[in-house]
Amino acid sequence: MHEFHIHIDAQWVSESFKTFLLREQRFLPKNFSGFPVNSPRHAPDLHLTYKVAEANTFHAVLDAIKSYLAAYPDSMVGYVEAEYIPEEIIISTQIFDPNVPLPFTLELRDLPSGQFRADEIHITLDRDKSDPRLLLSLRQMGFFSVYMAKEWGMAEIFTTQGSFHDVNQVVMPALLEYLNKVGGAVNCVVKEERMIHYWLSHPDVKRPPVIGKIHLSGNAVDLSNLSPSLV
Image (cartoon, rainbow, N blue to C red; front, side):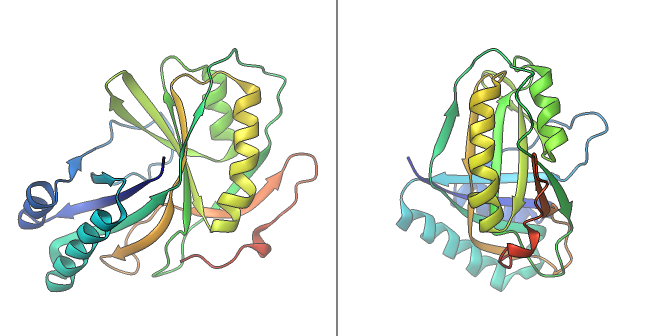
């Protein structure tokens, strides 16, 4: 089932804006719970989330936030993401097969000033029950990750971002085929999150890196030159 998300990813927000988000717009605090050792850290200090299935409600909340930030642009340092999630893909639990090769590796790059990613993949799984060899393989492929407490335990959320072409047409099909073959995942859900609207407090505010090159297994094809511009 599809869903719409709005995320406030911030280094700082004013108390009045936080009150507006939590009380009037019914956002929920979804802060992260740390990072793997020696892992790159791209998660924001403050993470507030709004999720809804109904498009009209989503656009009403988004319009309220856009109006607030137009009137009070100094209310936060960070960025706002408004996204469409076409489906949640559940990966079945099976024994890890170390003979399944990595389907690709990613080289990441920083975004130019004022630009933002167009698409994103999240792989959410049980950090402590999933096979550690699978977690290592996802890092070797170029995904970065963060921890988040869930009702069933500690989740590890692996992420990559980039253009719609790179994420939807290249990475997602190969990733799903790999996860369904390799096994080792527990409580694993894969989501594609397509950008609808974004807001930056400053053109050079800190943002996660995006896919610069994709090296497919076997022939190491670089598809970066085929990628359309980001949003």
